[in-house]
Image 1 (cartoon, protein in one colour):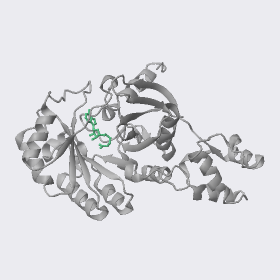
Image 2: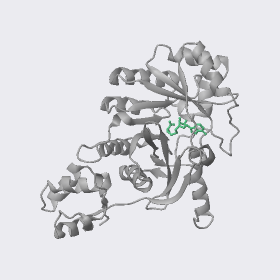
Image 3: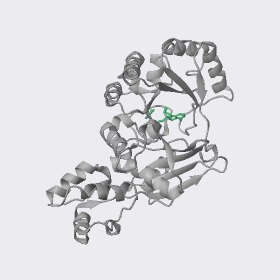
Image 4: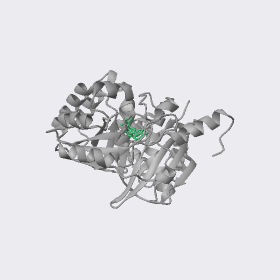
Length: 351
Ligand code: SAH
């Protein structure tokens, strides 16, 4: 029988399995604390569990760790980018960022991505599979262990579309914030989506308290469909209607992400359209300089982000400019994984 990765299970699920093998249910909480509070993943080290039960646990469960394949540290601002190898040989990226208020971690939710955004390296590398709840969670635990820091903020903005792996992402959030475990406040989590409308509604219903970020990148349907194929399924009107419902239901402000791309979305007309769409909405615009991806020509001119912020501000829309972190180790999101996967195909990974 294939072993179950215990890191994807909550206390109740572990409890049910224990009851099924004639053990006491309350042991589940003890085991969960070893895993999520003490971060002990070797059942033999769980000293308040009988030797006999430890033996059973080893037969039923496993913990699939992540292996640090590559670790790039910025010499400018302490940003650390990890390339993790998963138990099946696939790779994901995780980025640790230092802010004045603490450390924030950007995690991946899928191996690759199906969404096909034109400017994104993850899309170019293609989709392989969803991450399990355990694999998303272990990015947090492994990075805390490797770096020795406590993570206080989390962003689901790495490789993948979180709402295209909805169930595993929600399970991950529940595990991360479990009162008997790591007890991480979901107020400090931001989830970024390219705009999967039905899932935005489902997420709103859960009232998790997290911050929803929506990758808008254009206020015009034809140009948005061009750079973000998801817009052909759920266009701007439907997306913004879902955003309004989300705000109404949760009482929380939405962040719209907008990569300023020369010749695509940064003219006065674009600012007019964007301001028209967002005026009066409880939201915030985060402008991003586009990260160069080698297969594409998209770029952000020197002052373009600040100029566009001015254009918006003259139209009554406040925008912040995303700080660029780790510019010396940049390799835009998804590029490390793609390079490693290519190397593997060409005969073995050598870091
Ligand atoms: N799939 C999710 C989250 C992952 S991408 C989403 O689409 O929101 C995180 C953010 O980085 C998104 O806003 C995405 O549009 C943006 N992004 C991707 N590639 C980029 C690039 N080359 N330059 C700037 N931003 C990029």
